[in-house]
Image 1: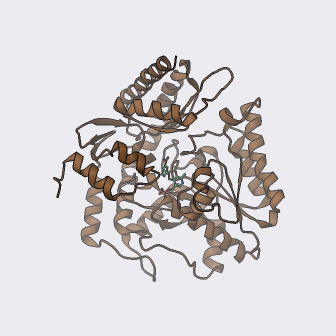
Image 2: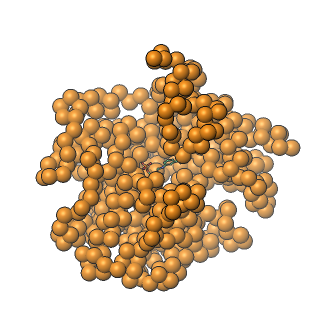
Image 3: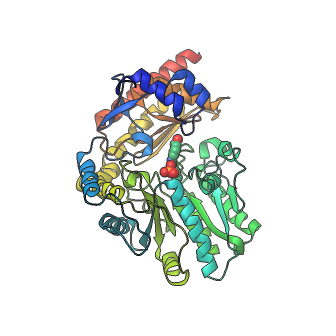
Length: 454
Ligand code: PXG
């Protein structure tokens, strides 16, 4: 057996036996894998001793930062007392009950029930089944179609990937499944042509109305969207977009599902993105920031309008997961929420480091290759461009994004590229100095890339 901390042999073991998510395994085998061993605050360290400033919170999730002893202690206490019990046959556990109440307290007056899952993907599968059941109970069983958007990300299960609008995912496995339709995304920079932001936001929202009329309003169950698309490139919609979407959903009585797997629990400076945008969802999918990634736990917050029908008219909901409301994961989530509240981290995102981060990103707009920056709270993107004045894209947008991302990694800053957009989502504990460091690194890398290109 290899030594526990021998990086080479761990990498070899991994490559020999571990199939990774969203990875080209042949390419990965040529390059090897990096073994991460430690985290503290904003920083992670790999097995070779390199330390990185993680401007991406793991995978949009470690919002309270690494190394939180009190979350580990809470999990340890719960595992010692009761490591597992189910929430199926008329039983619950203390952390599951307390967590459900706590989430609803944060979610606001109309949102009073939670269904627990293990992942964001399962959360999306769950509300999809709930939405169809709701309409059946309401005597409109033909309302089954869900409308989503191109370039949305809603997970990797069959339903999640179908709801998502990622072409490369649909191409594998005959997706989307029937009953799911897609409309355009509110990506002004890339798709608006000569339209102003406001006009484009309205036009893209009105595609929902056109799609509803095309399908037939009495066949549409729900519309789903991330308040701000994450994986799709941190696409911040124009200000006209969400009010119009809300109007259309109300007009046709269709359910509105917001996927807040990334935006939930403070990333936009409010507990939920729907509070930031002033919209009233019927379902809210949650995951990542619920436990800051310390344990896998996720779920759906369900509005009273739907929960009342499901509780009173549906009989048993034939759906659930062994680990729904897992007590150790729920204990981690409770400890995480306690940290967010005690340290006022959501307010910090809204009033302090969020605005500072947005201004710091904006300062990059003088760079030759930066077309625009967009950010809300601590969720941000830098749009790369070949020619600013005409918003011309690189011919292979994925290549340029990956070069910038890889150079930043080399220089000790972790961020993510989605095509030609550089995405940032740091922990809420980030300091102004750390924001400056990220932006300085990015600026130097952009200078280097421009020099190489010319
Ligand atoms: N919805 C949204 C908005 C997400 O961001 C999911 C659902 C699915 O959650 P689970 O827990 O099933 O992964 C996500 C997850 C990336 C990347 O590369 C993003 C996610 C997952 C994997 C990769 O940006 N987000």
